[in-house]
Image (cartoon, rainbow, N blue to C red; front, side, top):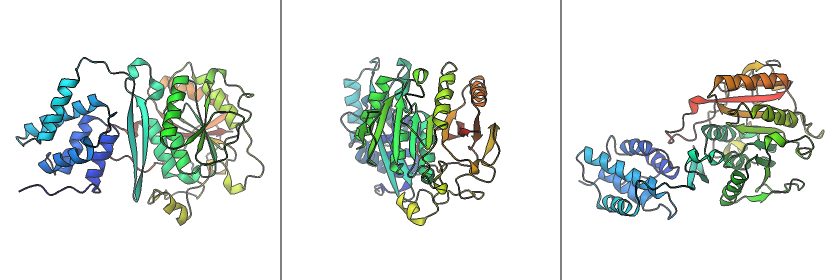
Length: 396
């Protein structure tokens, strides 16, 4: 008896397709394939993979990835003594003859990151690094960038109608999410020209126009401004035209040699004064969405997200764990704030960062436990969100 045709809208099938488009690990795809088949890769699952993944892969889809996936998929099916679809064998044979294992493929690949909301999804195509060992780290898709993007989409009220400035923007994912939640202005920056060029291509592929002139004003919501900004040479004079409400950074705490320049840059941006016309309840910390219309607008992404201790301004009564400087009442602060998401890979490097932040008279608060974003990437098994910490910084 033939397997029942799988429903693409079923969560397990949706996760499988999303993981495939994101070029998640082949191990993740095999695991999700088993889930779709109730424990094994059935004929129905094979047909679904062929119809909704392999046969729809674009011509520029990363062929070595497809070859590796097919190899492991066929091995999984044969291990269970099940029949393999002819189409899978034929496609694998094609890659076997056209690709050599010893070929070193360089360049960038396209990943489609799907943020899955209760009532819809946001799909973001991105050109990313293929081989970080070649030094192309600026174009890699780092876990903290995924985490910060989930945070933005889970708490859009913190960024709605706010001017946002990201340091070390990489592939541009955070900026795209900021534009999605309707930040009034989005400025992305990076110190590497190659990374900046790749970022612009990503923005254009997501239908955003690019502003590069530092003097021009961003008038339209679909415009994102990109600037070349090496931290070591950034000056107050250079940044005088930027008065952000919110500064953001993902995985920027990694190189001890760069930290003094990073902290100096953050201090300059955090010391900017917002226009006096800003309303009291429009402070840079924003608020968790408190209107149903906004909740609906962002595809129900905030359902069940409000913290039980939330006081209505985006921070709970204690505002998270204060690490150095300031008071615990982070909700009462006015002025710009910075959200930094980071994996702490070296405790000495992180402690050095804390020391520099303290010297710069900046308060840093750990929000990781009090402001957990929704899991909008449930299919991405290679993404370990438990390693990412979220901090908010502001001037004392």
